[in-house]
Image (cartoon, rainbow, N blue to C red; front, side):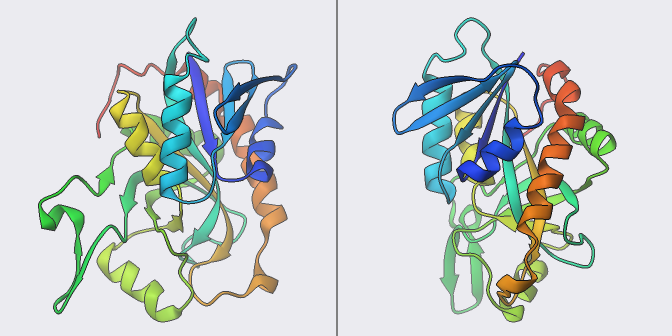
Length: 237
């Protein structure tokens, strides 16, 4: 089974590909490039849900894996976490991929897009796969929020947690990747390494290098699970 891994930026892509052995092949796509190692195609698709969705859709439709179609798509990278539940440098695997700011502001507060009668605001990765990846990597499992604007205040962080109790982290691409994967009929997973706390932006406190190293370690440990997983079992979402 081939696995498509979509990150936001090249430094995350390179952290993922370092986990896999063998020679690297590069496959050109419109506006992007797949880095292929073994069963894994890794793509830096751009920041934000729109870029992530477009890049994922192009990759899935490109025929790059025509001889062995993709059986799984993984959104991966670093992200902010609701600490201290998930400390800096730790790993998170999403058991829910949630569009946290897709909807409408009203006089009574925020309404998710589903309350407006449109679309969906959550994807559920295959639970058995979440459990297996969490066990292999030592990751915490919980909801990961997709936002178009990174949180920059304690007030916003509190509002997100109030709206999504139990959320472990926020990032900017997971829901876009999941939307494209779902339309192609391919299951999705999201894996995040924690580089910073959600809340007031303090770049001096960020641990990007540690998070990237954790991302490499996670994919090294999870590779056999991801490559060997049967996509026809335990599919929900």
